[in-house]
Length: 137
Image 1 (cartoon, rainbow, N blue to C red):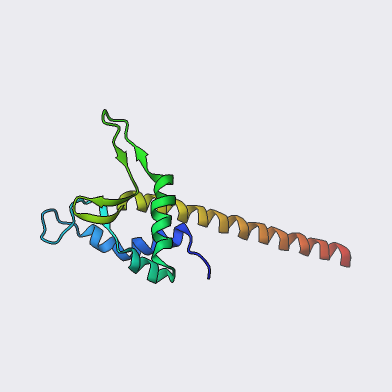
Image 2 (image 1 turned 135 degrees about the horizontal axis):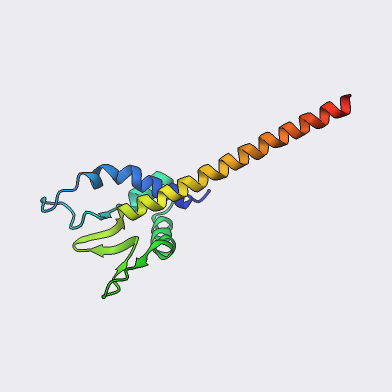
């Protein structure tokens, strides 16, 4: 079984939760406490990716959170985590705008990789064709 990439995990979260995130209404009954932090169902995301929920939780909490959380330069030096276990009464929350930014960066890297690979492959084909033409003549 192939493990999902960070890109696949974040895309699954984005696709599942973009609409609820964008429909935030403060004070709404059964709503969330924060616009930025979106509670997520890790079991749901894991089932969409066909992996154990512990894998998704571990990637979010232990890996991506450490890579992308930061500390503000304000007087309190407040920490802004990508993934937080509890925000108000909401549990297992992802900082949705930050996650969207990380996701956009990962998608851009993937696009650059495939573009570079495609150009390299095309250059290889042109080189082989030129070699074949020079050998035939």
